[in-house]
Length: 303
Figure (cartoon, rainbow, N blue to C red):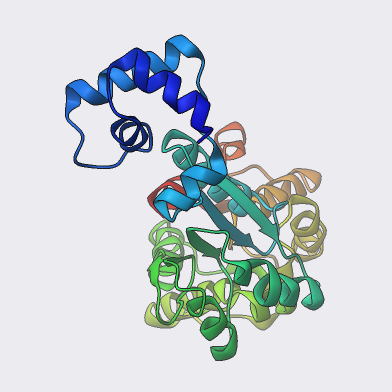
């Protein structure tokens, strides 16, 4: 804090500089009345605490780092929204690291930026980290929270993807469907965060438990986008004589792509083709999509 500024605040409030400093930095051992007087005086004088001095005094930077694989996908942007809103309400800044699919960018974040220790905590979203990478994160001696996947040595927030995939498939089975297709994530996505493979396993488990074989040609991969799923769903539904009667997509955007493809062939959803997704995407309501809401924004807020 600027010494002259805080001195003026202290004089206006009738308090010591030390008391005003503790009051405005949110520290304990300050009475409610003194805190109120300090805040009122600071507001009257237009006093703004110095970020650097406050950090030195408290040992905190009021900054949290958030590492995501891709800001462009709905799930990740929703998590960011939840994290950002909660931190803003708490008076914290957010530093976003969008590592994408470039290994060198990921190494830069883990080896350089995070290790500068200018963060009070780190949130890693849907990243599969090696043992060495986890050690690097733990080496900064800051709280670490993982979202969407296991993170050894850290608290994690995640849904049971396998169970929910089974639930989605069982919903279709309960409607009387046996010819069920699955749109999963592409192989390269599974290398980064294991969600596609986990949801595929849940689908297969539900089909097996019901005594129905999974047809390999009805398990197709897309890139978690509407456009990508639309393209593969067109191929999936192209043969009128032998097409699935239901589709479980591993995300809502891919489910919407399947709905759009079905319309191209004159198929009505759900009368001619049942489609279920998993996310809770806002567009789901527009398309009348049946989905399982994983509350991505809520996961971010909880972290």
